[in-house]
Image (cartoon, rainbow, N blue to C red; front, side, top):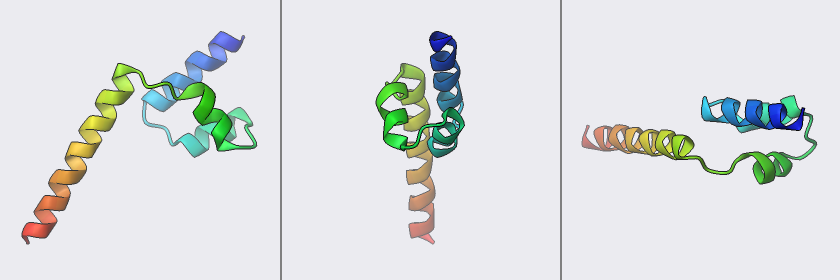
Length: 66
């Protein structure tokens, strides 16, 4: 059962669900528990975050150029 819970949690985070929501869903009293056990950085999560960072900087640059 633990492996299913872990897999489900990692998939929720990889899909972009908010970590606070996921932590509450798991019943963790403290978000640090979720961070400690469920947020090992997979290559998929790393790629998603890199893309989001690039998009953020592109939007910021466009705003500054206005």
